[in-house]
Amino acid sequence: MEDLSPFIENINHKTRLSPENMERLTAAFRVVKVKRKQLLIQPGFVAKYRIYVLKGAFHSYVIDDKGNEHTIQFAVEDWWLSDYNSYIHQTPATQFVEALENSIILQIDHQAEQQLKEANLELATLFLLMAERSAAYLARRIVSNLTQSAEERYNEFVAKYPQVVQRLPQYALASYLNMTREFLSKIRNDKVRKK
Amino acid sequence: MEDLSPFIENINHKTRLSPENMERLTAAFRVVKVKRKQLLIQPGFVAKYRIYVLKGAFHSYVIDDKGNEHTIQFAVEDWWLSDYNSYIHQTPATQFVEALENSIILQIDHQAEQQLKEANLELATLFLLMAERSAAYLARRIVSNLTQSAEERYNEFVAKYPQVVQRLPQYALASYLNMTREFLSKIRNDKVRKK
DNA sequence: GGAAAACGATGAACTATCTTAAGAAAAACA
DNA sequence: TGTTTTTCTTAAGATAGTTCATCGTTTTCC
Image (cartoon, rainbow over all chains, first blue to last red; front, side, top):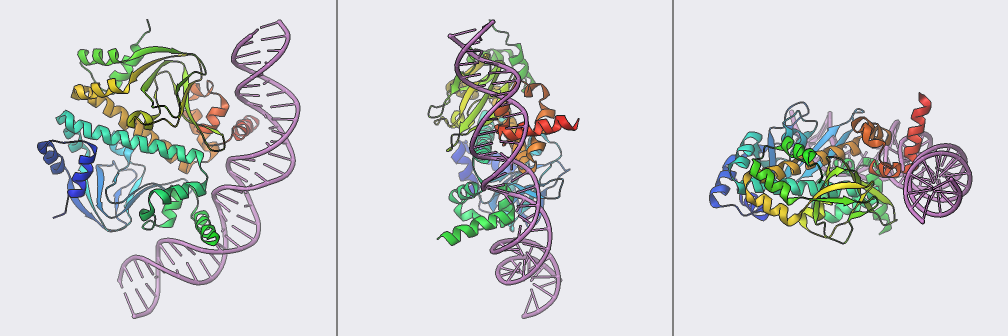
């Protein structure tokens, strides 16, 4: 039996749910263990689940025409992820969601989520807040991509998620920050030399 | 008196509202006329309004440390905009929202929106859908920035919004597409030569 | 525990995109 | 309508970031 308290904390941090609604919500999620390198979502298949990370690490990525991998999103403990476009619109995914470590997740399927949203205002509000915060977060990321150099984006990421950086493969971080793995390697090394 | 039917269409396209809720919703919006170059939102001030464009064109932008302007978002007829981070979290804005043409907008203030969201499930669902679609849209934009070259991003934009392109100043489009105005000019001209 | 695979570092050559500058065209506005 | 201001074009030189190829290191997994 997994400890769901981080999940419940996460929810409480967004909005106050009645005990019945919290019960209803948690009952809609299922605990799943996932092995490193396992794919939760694949292009061509509809993303069935919204995922909350209880333990472990994931990244979502696309592969472009030239065969290059681009990490779109990371998620470690207490983060949510999915292929947003696929999940929301229930259309075929374009992204992979892959475990970077052996992990434990909570997942809810789209239909169950719809039922919760339709059940009452409190639960609808929860998902509303999640969507609003996602949008605000994505908007910040776009601004940072438009205004910062590669090195600045890296520094920002390190400052924001110092403990996360060390768990991520460098090639995935590089592509998330919109640069090549080689260039990230150079940035890091220039930094070391300066010290 | 302005014709609100495009707005009502826009809402109906998202979710079905009862006549009473539609009435309540429209009553919460105010029609405002805006002159070209007028600013609706400015850094340092909390974004009070969520904006729907009835007529005209806007862009939101930031100014970076070097004094360069970066367009974050465009909005023409039937589009929504604001400084999302500022509006959602009611914190000081970092973006400008400026009219590119003389325009007519509908605006709702944050407090009124909160009251609508709390009023009933139908109205909460409307804002939920808006937030989800924003998030999905922003996610697509991030993918396109990560995977495409400057020229590809331009081609994609033209293909998606052919009529809009002609109304936007080229310098604003260039910065939206994450390139300099000079480089966009070059791309366009190379294209003409090829023909 | 050791072979195989994946990952990270480094350097040299290359290129997409930027910078700067100046003039032409278009739009604004008085 | 003419004048001023803003926007767009062009081109040459500069650079941030890429590509490619190689090698050492770490991780994986049988």
